[in-house]
Amino acid sequence: MPENTPTDREIVTALLAMNGISPTPEEVDQMVAAYPQSREGVEALYTMPGVRYAEPAVTFDPRV
Image (cartoon, rainbow, N blue to C red; front, top):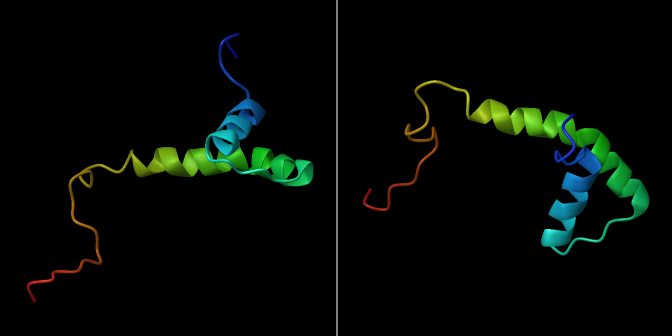
């Protein structure tokens, strides 16, 4: 890992601080452990071809 790349713990801690969330140290440990899988899921959302501008399956049309 390059020197200037933050660790998962640093990323999780920064995200919590940015949102004013103060979990217990045990909760932070759990979030840090779950972060790689969560990040992978978010990245997967951007890899689906052809759905970037697609309309979601459930929509609400107020004109109907």
